[in-house]
Image 1 (cartoon, rainbow, N blue to C red):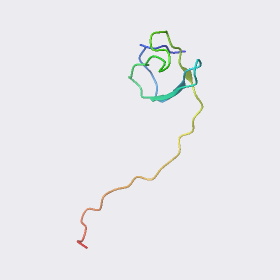
Image 2 (image 1 turned 90 degrees about the vertical axis):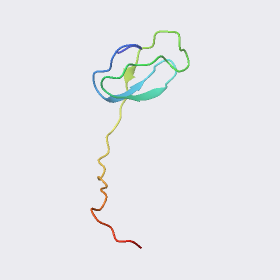
Image 3 (image 1 turned 120 degrees about the horizontal axis):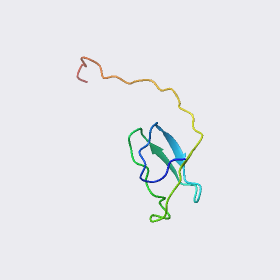
Image 4 (image 1 turned 180 degrees about the horizontal axis):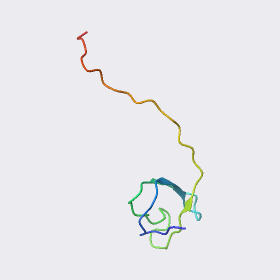
Length: 66
Protein backbone atom coordinates (compact mmCIF):
# COMPACT_ATOMS: atom_id res chain seq x y z
CA UNK A 1 0.00 0.00 0.00
CA UNK A 2 1.58 3.31 -1.06
CA UNK A 3 1.95 6.11 1.47
CA UNK A 4 2.15 9.87 1.17
CA UNK A 5 5.51 11.04 -0.16
CA UNK A 6 6.08 7.87 -2.21
CA UNK A 7 6.30 7.99 -6.01
CA UNK A 8 3.45 6.25 -7.83
CA UNK A 9 4.49 3.45 -10.18
CA UNK A 10 1.26 3.03 -12.17
CA UNK A 11 -1.62 5.30 -13.23
CA UNK A 12 -4.73 4.67 -11.17
CA UNK A 13 -7.44 5.77 -8.81
CA UNK A 14 -6.60 5.51 -5.11
CA UNK A 15 -8.75 5.88 -2.02
CA UNK A 16 -7.88 7.11 1.46
CA UNK A 17 -9.37 4.58 3.91
CA UNK A 18 -9.71 7.06 6.80
CA UNK A 19 -12.12 9.45 5.02
CA UNK A 20 -12.94 7.90 1.63
CA UNK A 21 -11.27 10.66 -0.42
CA UNK A 22 -10.31 9.49 -3.91
CA UNK A 23 -7.52 10.72 -6.15
CA UNK A 24 -6.49 10.05 -9.74
CA UNK A 25 -2.70 9.86 -9.88
CA UNK A 26 -0.33 9.33 -12.78
CA UNK A 27 2.82 7.26 -12.82
CA UNK A 28 5.73 9.28 -11.46
CA UNK A 29 3.57 11.57 -9.31
CA UNK A 30 4.01 11.74 -5.53
CA UNK A 31 1.21 10.55 -3.29
CA UNK A 32 -0.25 13.42 -1.24
CA UNK A 33 -1.33 13.60 2.37
CA UNK A 34 -4.96 12.92 3.25
CA UNK A 35 -6.96 16.10 2.55
CA UNK A 36 -8.63 15.84 5.98
CA UNK A 37 -5.52 14.94 8.02
CA UNK A 38 -2.61 16.72 6.32
CA UNK A 39 0.05 16.00 8.95
CA UNK A 40 -0.57 12.29 9.48
CA UNK A 41 0.83 9.42 7.44
CA UNK A 42 -1.65 8.39 4.76
CA UNK A 43 -1.87 4.93 3.19
CA UNK A 44 -3.63 4.95 -0.18
CA UNK A 45 -5.49 1.84 -1.39
CA UNK A 46 -6.26 1.14 -5.06
CA UNK A 47 -9.90 1.88 -5.90
CA UNK A 48 -11.95 0.01 -8.47
CA UNK A 49 -12.45 1.97 -11.67
CA UNK A 50 -13.26 1.30 -15.29
CA UNK A 51 -11.63 2.98 -18.27
CA UNK A 52 -14.25 3.91 -20.87
CA UNK A 53 -13.06 3.97 -24.47
CA UNK A 54 -13.61 7.33 -26.17
CA UNK A 55 -13.29 8.63 -29.71
CA UNK A 56 -10.47 10.95 -30.63
CA UNK A 57 -11.73 14.26 -32.00
CA UNK A 58 -9.50 15.75 -34.66
CA UNK A 59 -9.56 19.16 -36.24
CA UNK A 60 -10.24 19.28 -39.97
CA UNK A 61 -7.21 20.01 -42.13
CA UNK A 62 -9.09 22.78 -43.95
CA UNK A 63 -12.38 24.36 -43.02
CA UNK A 64 -14.65 26.58 -45.05
CA UNK A 65 -15.80 29.88 -43.54
CA UNK A 66 -19.47 30.11 -42.63
